[in-house]
Length: 72
View 1 (cartoon, one colour):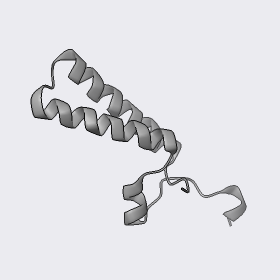
View 2 (cartoon, rainbow, N blue to C red):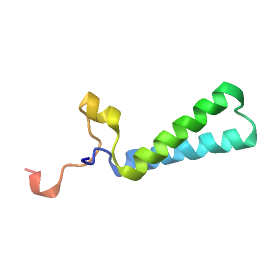
View 3 (cartoon, one colour):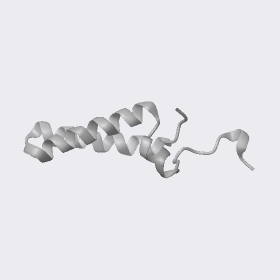
C-alpha cells in the first residue's frame, strides 16, 4: 500500500472519529444513526492509522504531499 493521505487529512479524520464516538457514548446518536457513526469512526481511524484510503485509490486522488525527490 502506498501512502495517499496527508497529515491534515489524517487529523481531520481522527477529529471526526472522536466526535462520532463522543456523540454515540453521550447518547446523542442512538439506534441506526449511532451504529453508522461508530462504523464511520472505525473506518476513519483505521485509514488514518494506515495512511491509506481505498476510496482515494479507486478515485485516483491523493492528499499526500509530493515526495522531496520528485519536486521540480
